[in-house]
Picture (cartoon, rainbow, N blue to C red):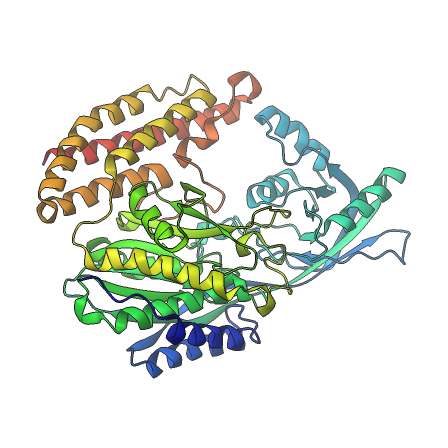
Length: 561
C-alpha cells in the first residue's frame, strides 16, 4: 500500500518555524548558538512524538576570526579580507614581496611546479584559487602567505577552509595543516591589488590572520524510526553553518525535520528504518561529525545501512533546476521518477558525487549514496553551494534567500525517494550501468596518464568482471531477497575502487577526488617530471594498481560464490 504523501499544510509551517529560529543563530560548531540549535532540533522532534536524542562528539575545530592586508608605504590603503579555516594563525603578521601567480588555475607539469616554487619562495602570493592542494604546494615551496582573489563579481566575501584532512586528524595528519597564513579578498579588491602591483613590481605586502584552534564537545541530533527489518536508510544534513547559513544548511535541516515527522506518522508500514542525523563539524572541522560517526558505527553501517542521502542547501531562491549527484550504482529511472513525479520532468543532469557533502562512508559498504542539488537558470557566480546563489558562505545567507515553494518541491522529491527505499524490498540498483561507467572512466583516465603507468590489467579485470556481474544481476532480479546482500557487497567494492584510494578505516585528503583517485596523480609525462617525482609516482602506481586488482578480484569472487 502506498504511503500518504506529505501534507504541506502540516509540515511547511513547522519547517518555516525552524528556519525563522535558525535565522537568528550563528551555528559554527563549538559555539553556544550551535549547541542551542542542536537542542532545539531535538525538542521539536520530541514535541512531535519522536524519540530524538543528542549524541556528543569531540571535534578539532578551526574558527576563522580575522584577516587583514596592508601595503607597505601606503598607510591609508585598505581592502576587506577574511582568513580561511585551518589557515595558519599568524596574528603578528608576515611581510614580504608580492608575487602574482597569473596561471594558478591552469594545470602544470612537475617541472613547471619546480620552476614555480622558485618564484614563490619567500613571497606573498596573489592567486585566483585557494584550494587545499595549492596551499599545500605553497607551504612546500616556502611561500610566506596566500591572498586568494575571488573569481566572480559579487562583493560579498566567502568563508571557506584550506584544511586538507578529512575529519579529525591522526597524529601524522596534523603535519599536513598549512603553516602559512591565507586570506581572501573579493574580485574588486583583487583588481585593486593587481593594479598596485603593476605600478610597483617590487611592492611589499603585510598580511595577518587570527584563528581559534580548539577541541570542543559538539552535539549531534539523532532520530531513529525503526522498520520491520534491521536494515535502515541514513538521511543526513549538517546543522552547523557560517553565520546564519539559512540556505546552507537550515533549509536542509528543515527538510530532514519534515521527513522525520512524515515517516514517523506511518512507521507501522515501513520495511526499513529511517535514521536521521544532523551533523556538526561540517564547516570548521572538515566533515568531522560524519567521520566521527563512521569511525564509531562502521560495523553497524556496513551490516544494516542500505543508503545514505545527504541533504545540503535545498529550497534556495531562484534555484529552479534540479541536478543530482549520485554514486553511479543507483538506477537513473529511480532517481528521476521522484523528480518527474513532482516537477513533471527529469533532473537537468545526474553526475558523479564529488568531494564534499559529508560523504564519509565509502569504507562502510553502503551501496547507495546520492544527494540532491539545484541551480538557477543562469549562474553568475563561482559559488558552488546555496543553489548557485552568490550569498553562499557569507553573512548574506539570510531568510530572504529561501523560496518556500522550491523548498516544498525538494521535500516532496525526497519523500518519493525515501518511500521507495523504506518500503520496497528490492533496492533501486543498476550494477551493470555502474560497471559500464567505471570502464568508461578508466578509459578516459588511461588517455591522460603516462603510458608507462599501464592500467591494461585493471581494464581487463573490469572487463572480466562483467559476465560474472551479469549473472549475479540476473539472479538478483529473479530472487532479490536471496541475492541482494551479495550484490551489495560487490557494489561496495566498486565504490571503494571508484571513490577512494585508502583502506576502509582512513579517508583520502579533501582534494583527492575524481574517478579512481589513486591514479589521478599519474597524469604527467616522464619528460616533464623530475627523477625523484617519477620514482614516487611509480611507487604509487604499483601500490594503487595492486589495490585496484585486489578489489576487482574480490568483487569477482563474491559474484561467483
